[in-house]
Amino acid sequence: MPAFPTLSQNPSIEGWDEGIAFDPTIKSQTEGGYKQTRPRFTRMPDGWNIAYKALPQADKNTLRTFEKTVKVGSEMFTWTNPINSVTYNVRFVKPISYKLHLTSIYWNVEFELEEV
Image 1: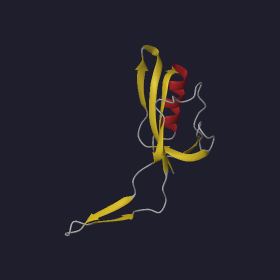
Image 2: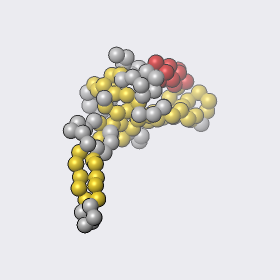
Image 3: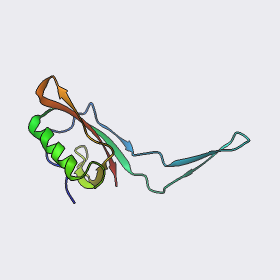
Image 4: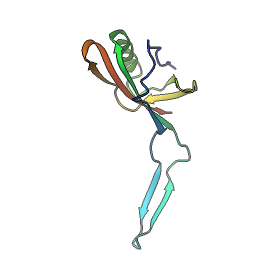
């Protein structure tokens, strides 16, 4: 299984967001106005929104190659959370967003991960 590449900097604290990957609740409304709920799954996978600010072009190229290697969300990979150093099996939720940061040599990069 591939591992998330090592980049020259850590993610930005400003763009860091973590929590449950999705709400597994199934809801049913009754005719009496009551709502019945139950979990769709027993497992609650974690999810992360991650941002890098002013990432050098070389790191952007590394991420782009890695994204193509795992075919965006098709394959899982290992990722070590830089906050608590725990390693997770994850996949990308959607394609990585690359936006220029003031000049053409630095990039703001954002992506979402979900635990597999």
